[in-house]
Image 1 (cartoon, rainbow, N blue to C red):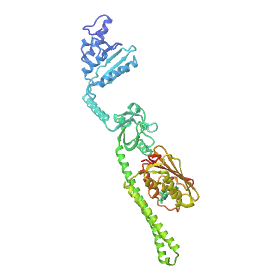
Image 2: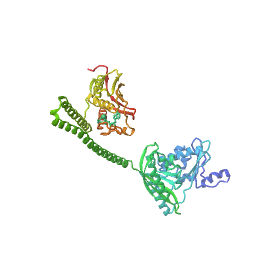
Image 3: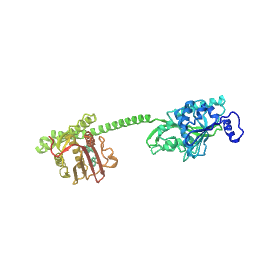
Image 4: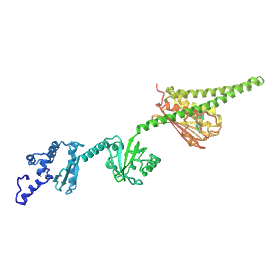
Length: 520
Ligand code: ATP
Ligand code: MG
């Protein structure tokens, strides 16, 4: 062990070296490859108030750091910094690491005492030299005040909730100004670590749904060196979207030249969410009022026409009935009866929708033979459409007993089958198929009719909505709204595929337990 603590300068040159080391202002500690302190000078003892005798026992690097940390009241992360510096020093041996680096190893991060300036030089055999440079002379009170102010400002930026980003002033055109600094809130909000964005441009935060008009407005303000505030949709590292209120201000140096931009981004997702909810509510109200007006015009038309025909049939009966044959009288009476039935059906539909909208419609599933049910329904619709169409029903299912609400199923299928007949030219075929998988029954109704224009398909299930191509075919636009309600009540799904002038296919899938024989 060599100690360089000598009282007076020795004569021989080799003996002079230790004395010279002790004269240095720099504190020096040399660690051997097995990480033991093998050489140090007096400046080290003084700077860190260490025990010279203890240092002579060749403490290990880790003991050394431990003792210095305690002595200097370092925080754990400050000690860690030293370890990391050593790793770096070994990675590029012979290169004094961060020469004159100001490393803040003071007890408190914002402590007033000046930071340590140190060098770590690693050697290939993993020995290394630690040099502590002398502390620069204390700043003037004015400089100290300014430093204090800077430290405070830094702490505001570091602890701010808003994301803060500093870029160079130019170029404003592609690729855009480079990012020089981001605060921790930026990482929290965007998911990007500083090293992933430094040197890149803030454009990396934009994405496909960022409004180009807002970006253009922002760019114009930047070109005019104007401070500006915009609301912008940005993208996180995982490409999820978030709304920010972005304030950008240019920073000027003492010569009056713009040098940087400071961009503060406030998270306004919550506000945007409330705005969207309000807009949705407004949209719903508009839809309700549109529906109301469609309802009024539909009811006035749909009720007035049959009422007029009932009135005229009864007037004819009143004035000319006595002169008619029994058959002619019956014909008028049947016309009145069927018109009343039609109106009753319409009222039933309206009431049904009212009940379903009010959540007062309930589901009563029972076990029944769904194949027989479909056969009967097909025959009854075939009877009502007569010879105009041929309706075929086909089923390959092996478990015909299903647990479903019969009334709801009846409403769904009869509306779809009667639509298929109503919107198809005479002599065309209507196919009705039933399929089954483990948990579902699928009812497919396919026609060769007028089809549904693509622009109408999105509104098919709206109340009182009718396609543009229905011409004079009568209807109220309630059938499919009822179908949709019933399908929803059964927790099923309905899909439509349609090509104008080719035909339409409705596919209704309902979850249902099924059995081969009637369950007890
Ligand atoms: P109703 O209330 O008397 O049933 P509607 O048939 O007009 O009147 P929906 O059954 O709700 O009303 O159908 C809505 C619209 O969807 C129809 O007006 C029609 O434009 C279109 N549509 C429904 N089914 C078919 C189909 N099979 N082929 C062509 N268009 C159809
Ligand atoms: Mg219909």
